[in-house]
Amino acid sequence: MSEENGTSDTCTPTHEQNPYGRSIVFLGRERSPAFVTESTRLPARLTPGQVLVKVELATICGSDLHTLNGTRTTSQPCVLGHEGSGLVIASAREGLREGQRVTWGVCASCNKCLHCSIGLENKCKTLQKCGHTVVSAAPLFGTYSTHVLCPPGTPVVPLPPALTPTLAAPINCALATMVNALSKVPPSPPLGQPGASVALVQGAGMLGLYASTLLKEAGFSKVFCVDVNRVRLTRVVDFGAIPVHPDQEEEVIPAGSVDVVFEVCGNKEVVSQGVRVLREGGTYVLVGLVCPSDAHLPVTALVLKCLTVVGVHNYTAKHLHQAVTFMERHHDRYPFASLVGLVYPLSDFRCAVEAARSGQFFRVGVNPQQ
Image (cartoon, rainbow, N blue to C red; front, side, top):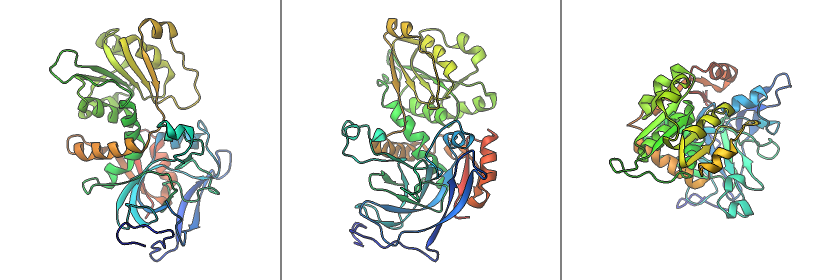
């Protein structure tokens, strides 16, 4: 390996004392057990573009719970998990070296197909997704694992020293996705100037809290956050938003008073309310409705109000870089670290899932090294 750039055509990984990694492999909801712990031999050599990472912390995303519950389909068997950060232990890619702390993208793209050529690498024709790819194609491409082997085409971003594992682990899903969502929104006039924009965030989960901070830092004069969960609503103030329960929504947020709405709750029933509050020419960004749904779009209102409706699913490499930069700049201003609650060893993954299902925490952590 070149000490200058950490690259070579083939690269011998640092195996430490154990040449095997351990992973949680999802077999399918109808199987018993639905998931098992498997050992996989770490590669003796990397091919160009691969990066081998030792996972320091993974966090359980709501989409993983949907997979385990059977409400979201995925390839089987696969190594579950996509949120995480870790330490490079071997690299066959320019610009990355052993010892760097990194996060990585959930999407490995070819960078050649039509979708990649128009900036939709997250919709690559030959896409491999971290936590969703069958093990025969990617045996170590999931974060509920001691190691992640990032395929070529996976964005891998170095982390600044200030970003601890609890700050860094959710960046490569929730935060990067919301950075992508924000990129679909017209810029807000500076605070104090006429026309400073108002936003509504539908949902006070992890996506909603990140959305609130992003909108606030982008210059929105008011950011409302609506959720049925009153406990979660108590937290949104810490992240720059004004909490609103649905019982008060029509009173607090008049029709036509909002410039931008982010749907991040996954509930199709909120769509009509989002259209109601948008002003003429407003923008509706749909992010959370990823599970099969027959959400009704009030087409007449969309046309008469000249609304823009945008769907956002995952993100590209530039959004991941921007997400890391945003967290570095603002981690002292908002209590992001508090969003990760209990942390379980990989051997207690079943308990970690039950804790995540309880809804008491925005994120539950998994330490694969324990």
